[in-house]
Figure 1 (cartoon, rainbow, N blue to C red):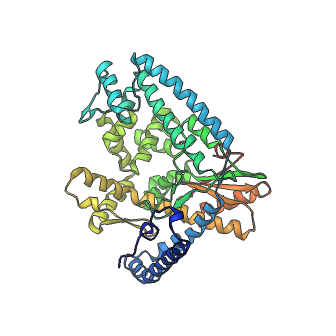
Figure 2: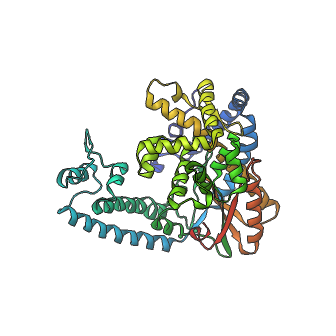
Figure 3: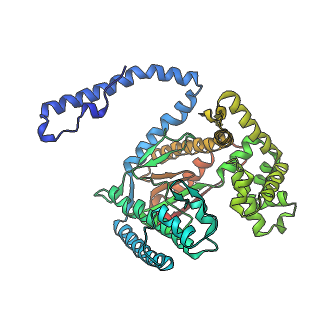
Length: 458
């Protein structure tokens, strides 16, 4: 049965032309169709859940989560409009200065946002190395420019220009559209959009605000709590690596988490065969890249790019890593084999992700499927754990009759607008509920910080 769309029921005519009686009739039709769909759809959906063995995911995670998300969307988050405008103005000045600098270096004006024109200047006029011709001209993708950045200040300026213009259009200008009269943004949080089960944020996307750069962190400062409140921000420490330790059952990684405070130094010690106290900063940094890359099925090529080393050396790092953590190699191989056999991957809580790419004839697509098969059980389990934590934190705040509420969720992080008198109670609730959201072989570590804006609390 095909039901009419919203557009078909409410055709785009001028309000004056549509009689009010017709508007009411259309509203009734729309409401009735919606009710009828839910009524008729309930049984087949229940049967499908049973067939897919995902009733527990629906009943224990997704259904109660919808209430926590509804509460969060209703509360919204406060934005300091003046500070946001000032931030946008400052970006505008920086962009104008960079524009001038780029034109001077190029010797003439051009459209910096045009990949075709930029490619011609970089690889045609300036004769920079590494130019790759495409159908439309030279490629000026981030990966191409990032390789040139250390040696060419002009490229560094172009990359910074790109970053600042994106911040200005997406956030400084983009966010202001969503601020309501009460100075709050009421974003949408979707629980069924991503393939891994992560919550996504739209209208606007508040999960994508950059945190690694100073200019990105400045943006977090415009998000503020209401009068009489502060922000309490709690996030999981290395949740995906801890899940990997648990799901793989690797004794060395579990042991490192139980006895070592610094997992990256512990990994470096094993991979490079040096005592933990003699691990250098570079070795630790390289081990960190391998630790996080392994979860995403990183290749020797990918790692060599990340660490600016040869492919052969990168492969040796990966080999040493798997020798140090044999349980992880076995787990990742089993994850791929199981997904090939069944056509899907499964999280610790039974959430399934179909991976049709594993059966494709194209080698690149199959490789992508294998990386998904390695990562989906880990990232999906992290998403499930965060959803369970959200449900429990939301309930605990209410059960304790607190005014404090969740205002934002960003991947491994929960942000609470907490009444000043309730701060200690809120911190306890966050740490307890988040660390107990799953029972793992290694502790789930949660850190909670307090601040007068989102950046301060992070």
